Length: 275
Image 1 (spheres, rainbow, N blue to C red):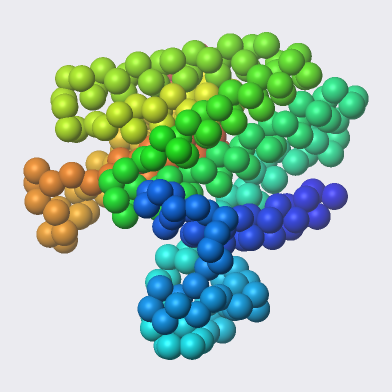
Image 2: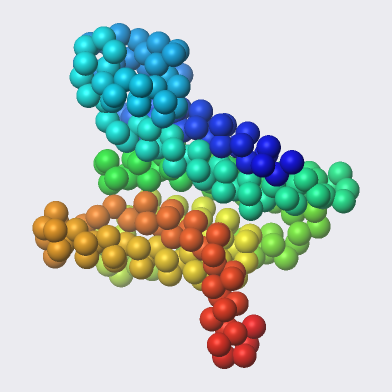
């Protein structure tokens, strides 16, 4: 049953990843994500349905428009592939609780939790893509992510009796938001308000998973950002005073916390006999 859930989630993730490419292009420009239909920006031909199959169409077309031959960015299949992989990851992590739920209430709670983290995967991918391109985290996406997390996780807590998880989630959102806000105030320009708002949203999800996830997710974001920044300096892509968008590393660090945070924290505390 779990492989079936993971396969279905992966296929859904690939399809959503295709849509996220549209969102990443249009939302920062204030355009509708519904109309007009996707078309080649060079020749204007509408994208045919059979040329819009996630990943496979790009490979079949060898990364070029069927009509004019202009190159199609490899970011399209990358976004689709990452979204699909994250959907599989969420299904593998949270699908068992849904499949083995002992009561309808437990099943509802597990299902709401699953949907919440699938939403985090989708929003996270598109926010990272936009931030890499434009150094922006649009409110039009950050606010819905926070609202979706708050609503779905609150509902999961109510139906599943997860009061402790809900309290951790609230504390995580407030704590991460406060720390990022303090950094933004102390070092203007070093941290944007978009990062602060994203920290609140990520804190909701990390706190829900556990204290270890919250701590590791917070630390991992800065560690990944520092490593990427150092690598870019070494290859002379940016100067020592140059900036990099921090949103993608916040999101990547968040997933490190979600997947590995609690085990890593337990292992660390175990070294001191505290676990």
